[in-house]
Amino acid sequence: MRITTYPGAIAQVVTNLVINACIHAFEQRHSGNQIVFSIDKNLKNGVELTVRDSGKGIEKAEQKRIFEPFYTTKRSNGGSGLGLAIVYNLVASTLGGAISVDSTVGVGTSFRLTLPAVCPAARPQK
Image (cartoon, rainbow, N blue to C red; front, side, top):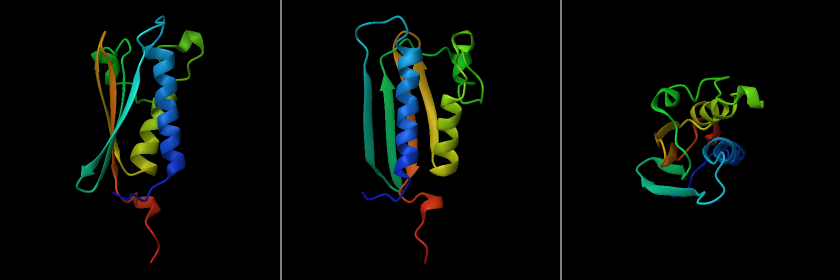
């Protein structure tokens, strides 16, 4: 499948998700750390990118807030709480897609991005 989108925005999203996993998911773990990327290009009108880690997971109460600007569990360690807010805004606004999170404490976290084949803002001009 061919997609028309903003590769810089996708790169920023992936970078922020990986950094977020390194800071939060693998905190105080030195082995067994994995980040797995998968792409499902068989969607009718787009692609699905999943970024899954084998980290410590996210509590259900926190999952509801992680995309809020300035929400962080690392404020005392210099966290700004902007990483996942930026990810959400890039996916929803710039790329015209959707993002969801699924996490189990002690197992890991999965972010699922559903992106259209043609990003609304990147449509070719007629």
